[in-house]
Length: 260
Length: 210
Image (tube, rainbow over all chains, first blue to last red; front, side, top):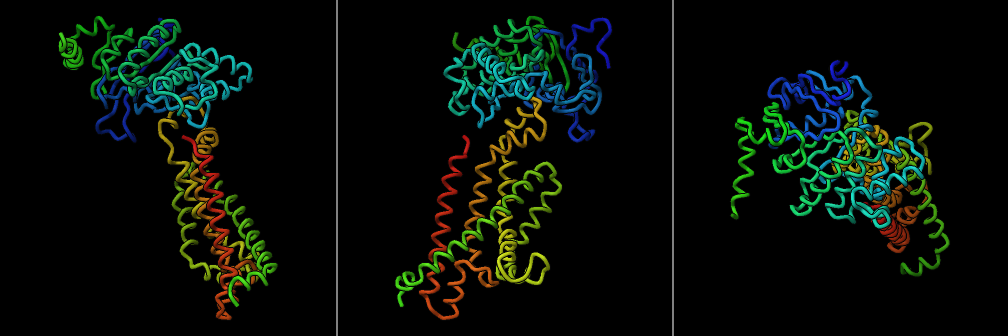
């Protein structure tokens, strides 16, 4: 039930011996025996190939999924013991293609969680304006538009603003920049990395892109077929001997050398 | 007598039959929508009831309309001769297209949108009413449009059990072997169907998101 007694305030999220299997079928778990401690204020990247279990791990944090075995603790409380609605309102969530509501204006999208939390409308409006500015969108220009009138990059910015709306201490991001063109992606990655430093939130970021992992992560956790196989700061990570780590690192070299 | 002369000499009678017809359709559609849309919302959250509800609604559709009117006559309270029985039959007929479209519209939503809604801590009923329903509205309306056009046609048969409407002319014309009389019922019914189709089609496009 409780976080580790020696450092209760530094651990925000903890996976303790977590298995996840679809319909609890024993054969081939999606996630197996993952134990991982995520610290307050850090940006940790879950890196891995498609199907390695990184998105599953993310969804176990806000109880979109429940472990088949083991437990996930958020702020010291097992997710299975907490109310999923309250838990999720305290955790921002950003996904690929943003998942904005097409029938809501940008302001309504961003203000959704505050409105679910029954903030009064002037407070919501002020918060929406503040957030749009934070993600680099002019509120006067964008508030009343609908998602389909925005570019992919702009929609993704709105997705980030929406996740931050109720000022959650934790932010989960599932390949948020994956569907963008490379130029826009680089732009958003740069901006987001400086934003993340200012916000001081605990960020769990899923990606299959090693460059993105190195750029944004203070720690990188590598997953292979549902197992956590490597963990370390970007500098340490590059030096690890694990074969899967080497494969990811190998993706860095040839493209950099190609035009030399 | 050519159809035009018949139409002119009987215009008051045709007009009042048209009004009866429209009333019949409007009442039936109001009930059908009031039943099928909430039922559709309900079966989205209780999936095990889906095949039962859609199955029953489909059965009504397979009964030939004239037979359905006939079957209802001996049933107490809702049966008998006249408008009430006809309206019940029309409701049963209109249920399926509305129910099916409601269900399809509510379930055919981009999974990323639903995932985001869930992850943001919306409850199931908030997701249903604030996300699924508004996004499904144009599909639901398409079902209402189909049902309305069908009902306008089927309502002509209601005259067979004494419910009035434009079918009165059609049955009378058939009995008299007089095309002009048949057309006096058939043409206004066809025009009504076209008008309803256009009007609801317009509304449907307006409600369409994305």
